[in-house]
Each structure stands twice: as C-alpha cells, then as structure tokens.
Amino acid sequence: MEHKDIKYFEDYELKKHTTFKIGGCARKVWFPKTEKEFAYLLSTLDNPVVLGGCSNVLISSAGIDRDVILTTGLRNFSIDGFTITADCGVKAPMLSIQAQKNGLSGFEFMIGFPGTVGGIIRMNASAHSQAVSDTCINAKVFDMKTKSVLELSKNELEFKYRSSILGKKNYILLSAKFELTPDDKEKIQALMDRNKEFRRNKQPNLTLPNAGSTFKNPPGDSAGRLLELAGAKTISHGAAKVWSGHANFVINTGNATSKDISHVINKMYNMVKEKYTIELEPEVKFIGIKDREEEELWNTILKK
Image (cartoon, rainbow, N blue to C red; front, side, top):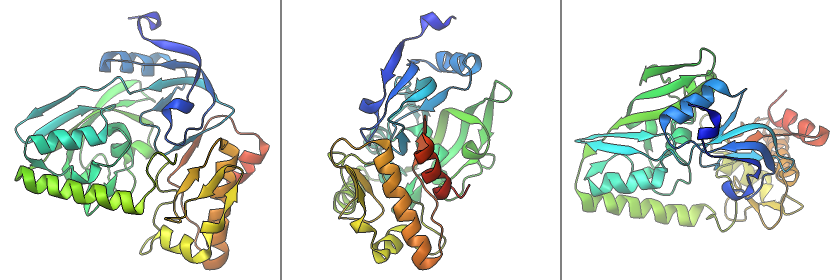
C-alpha cells in the first residue's frame, strides 16, 4: 500500500465537518475507507491528528499545521446475536437505531449523540443512566508509540467518568465490540424517543452550532448548575455566546472564530472559579494553531 492509494485533499477546510462550524485548513486531510488504510496512515504519517464526528472539539480558525485523518469513511459494523462490532467511524445514533431494530437494549442513550464510536469510547460517553462502559466488552486500538495493533479488554480500557485509557495513552481506536441486552423493540423505541425529547428541551440542536457540554461535571455537582448560578448566561464574545437554555453550552451565532469561543470558555471557567473556587475541567478540546492570545486563554482553562 502507498499513500497515493488513499483518498486525501490538500489545504482542506475543516469547518464543514465540525459541529461548531469553525475551523481553518489542514495541510492534508486523509479519508481512509478500511481499517487497513487507517492503520497504514497511523503507522506512516508524522504525528497525525485523528478526527471523527468533530463534535467535542474546537478547531483553530488558523487551521492545523499537521496531517489530519478523518474517520468518517470507516462505517462497517456487524450484529451477531447480542453482540455488535463497529468501526471507529460509525455514527452513534445510527448504531442506536440498528440496535433497536434488532431488539437490543443498551444504546438508547446514544440516539441524539453527534459523535462516532471512536469518540464515545475515548470519553466513555454517558447519559440517562447508561454509559458506553456498560456494554463495551473489548476494543482494537492502534498504539502510536509502538506502531502496533492491540486488543484491549473492558478492564484494560480503564473506563471512568468521561474518560478511558485512550485519553491517557497514545491509543487510537480502530473498532469496538459491544454486548447488549435483548428487550422489546417498542420499549426500546419509547426510551429512545424520551431521550430525544429530553435532548431537544435541554440542549441546543445543531442549527445552533455547538460542541455539546463545555465542561465536565465536578464530583457531586453539576457544571451547568454552577455556571447558571455564577451568571454565565450573560457571557458573549464576538459571535460566540453561552446558550440561553443551558449555561454549559456555547453556541456559534454566526461567524464566530475559535478565538471568540476561547474567550467565552475562559470567562465561564473564571466566573465559576472566582465564585466557588471550583476549577471546571473542559470537555471541549482545542486543536490546531494558537496565537499568543489563545495560548494564554487555554493555559488558564487547562491550569498550565
């Protein structure tokens, strides 16, 4: 296999792929269609950025000065009895729908997620008393340090609240296997419908570009509650602002830049820290070129 055999574009704008609708150009963006192509790119490119649904990232308006691999073409999945195996690029809502069609429960919470399997495993996505860690039994990952493929059990994935081993070691998910529970299809659909309704009422839809929850919940509390009481709904900068419906969401009201979003997130962080001496941890990850101003804003948020 050679690089020329894999689809790619040079100076490719990422804005169209991000849920924030923000992002400059990457020098080269690759679109692998098979696990073999993906593993080849991971083993041969120099420190590539891997992106999936781009739903919890803020891509710099100045772009990314590295190669980027988009996993959206890795869409294979299979269902065998109660077991579902899925590539990292499979979209979470689609997997939720397929599980329901097969009378399998455990993925109802994913029906409104904009992300892919790679992202939900990495951050152990959860909602409505369900989590990825409830059903994931093993995963195939690429170790960027040793340039080798590893099979990890559920225990080895080290699932915790909003985290897994993928965020601690330089592991990239290739695919994952899940074991679900058989249940009545109508019951599963009803739960999915309730979850969709909850999401419609409590979270901005993607007609208001956003990256989901901005901060993780601190132990024993809610980031949204703290931000609400601190007055974060008044925060705005340029075309970015805190959503009026929930204080833990930042929306792009028009042509916001990554710097606009960074200023808003920084103000949210400082507002809660000053009022409650609680340092919130961001769920949104900044990727790409930072100027000095953005560097300072994120150094504060990340406590550097």
